[in-house]
Image (cartoon, rainbow, N blue to C red; front, side, top):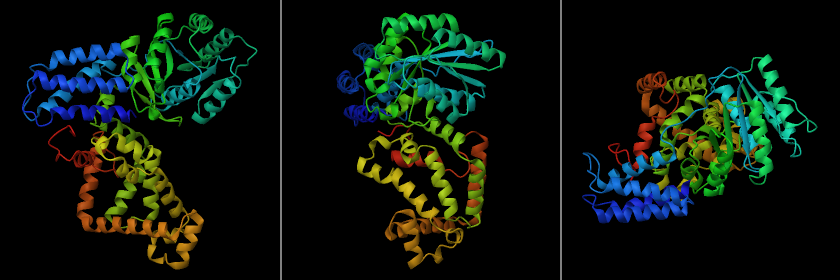
Length: 476
């Protein structure tokens, strides 16, 4: 996410490295580089101007606090001002009203509107514990209603049936009446998309607005269209009481221009980010965390939340106990690999760790191979239960059978077995008492809302990646 911008910003701070103080000249040089980085990221000119004027005003004569150097102090200032530009704090959905709380979602064709409705439904169901009903008022796009119905089955949320022969207004009226009678907490309305914001689209949505009386009206925009996304959202916000924006396809957006421009141009907050194609890949927008990632500091808070939500804690506890007893086997290794995939794989996890932006792509590709994880799981699945617990049995003909069954080769099987043997040796070196002590620490972390049992100590990982021994928040 926003990889190009992260790299360019990191490069722009290098001019301050080795400087003993922040002078007007070296601050000006750094600001010029930041400006270039933002222009390349397709951030709106107005946003860049306001942001840099504020940074320059605050930077001149800025005192460097104890424990920081000028480069770090300037980065801290950029972090603070950039966070203000994109919204300061997370703004969640306001659903405090007499049920059902109506949320209307609009957007242009191709922005990912209908999928975002399904993602939002799953989010409200799982994280907010709401009883949700979805309805499609899109009677123009072929199969739009059917698409939402299929998605409703995927996310396990109720769907109110409608047809293309009904008017959008009537569909909304009937869906709202049904939601009231059946005591739903939230009604999500998917509206018709257009190729561009036009008079017909606005006229229809205004009618639906009066009919549904939504407490939230969200506009879905494609992050990859850069500052155009912000201007499209503004056109919509000028015509209707927009309450927020869902920014989609951020996983494929290396620039980040839309994320940095939307709030300033529209005056409306980004409430959610679409971070992948899967129905569970919708994240609340936290400006401070996004800026932290942009500046190469990672996003450990989001990582911990994701681990807490997606890791099977019971299995993690069982794996830790087996490790302590020296009974960790290939089935346990497979479970850990699958849990990692559940969280988006190593690429997603590493992207939230400080310092990853500075690791060369060649090294990243070796670490972050999702295909490697799938291959390892396939190899383990091709083994018998006995082979997973007694790897010494796996010789000659067995290796050939496992390779054929997993669609790999004997070399890949040998590589997996060597990796597993290394893990076992490390566990034996730790010894039972050390492992029990680590388990106790993990349990304590889990109870305090940090990393759950069975996962690594994030502070040690981040310190190691930043290469600064843990005495500095910044990896620069």
